[in-house]
Image (cartoon, rainbow, N blue to C red; front, top):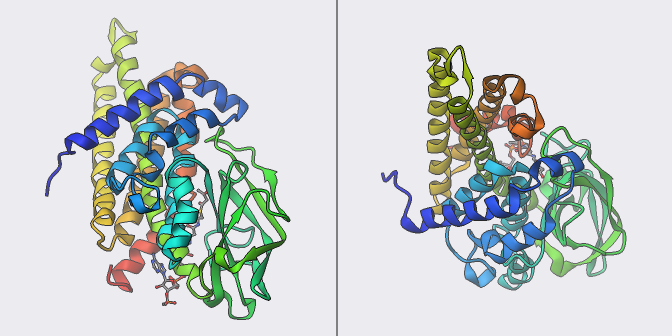
Length: 383
Ligand code: CAA
């Protein structure tokens, strides 16, 4: 067991820190107000090879590893959690759907390389109005028509939906047998019948673009099918296992970002004739939060290392997601309190971080679903 990051991993962290200072910190409060996504910065980050860190060079990636990818999500999320989730969905959920599918290498090159190399943006279409926690309750249908399939349905809460060049769509080939016929396709922006629906107006991660994606008789050729009927549900689950480590990293980054702000504030802010960190109650509170952050980091990196080593990681990913997101909610709420009235004001950032933290307990499997996965691992599966 080695608790040290490698020199390369530390260098990557510094590279991402420099990027976030220069490209994400300026305007982060304004983007929260206007819900404007920093598209140019997102493209620039892609050109740095960040969306391909965990994918092989044969499919447009850099083959660096899953832990480095997780470190990068954590770093950007310290400053801009909206950017963090756009990064994670692009890489883990779109990229993962292609990478872990039974698609041919040719399909993987075609559909993963543009995303991994940062030339295009990806999105993941699983959730529907009646298929949230119960991901098996799909109503999007893929009807075979000659050599092609015709897709009909509406996906909701699609992160990156309005920005995406490529979207993975999960659908049922035969509703009479439900999940056993779930399959997946890659659909591209501009295809006839495929359009952006309602744009969501959110409590947090306000500059991330999240929308409905509507499919009305979208004709797709069979070479766009990446999971055959029957393979779709497992692919979605395996992909979400990876995605949950990404959300854990986003949440940990949010917690650390808020914590760092509170530490600096407590050194400057004086009340009752001394800096407030000299109040033992507040210092102990910070010690408790720091301990929570360190614990969360351990389970997060463990899950990433297991995935990187090709070992079973479903339970570890659920533990990481559950732990990091609960810690993010606790730490950000306490940091708002720590900054008092200033903590409630937008220019101090921590109130935004508290709003951003909330969704991490909900998306990519609510924390109640994570407990279901963890208990399932204990009592049913052997992972
Ligand atoms: N890996 C591989 N296979 C898996 C698996 C995993 N992690 N989990 C389940 N499976 C397999 C099972 O082994 C089983 O296979 P068999 O039929 O061969 O036995 C099959 O899938 C069905 O498994 P379950 O009976 O456990 O399935 P279920 O219907 O009870 O659902 C669930 C399980 C864990 C509750 C699942 O529905 C789930 O994860 N729900 C949450 C959905 C979710 O996370 N949605 C987020 C969408 S993305 C998002 O948030 C948007 C965004 O942009 C950020």
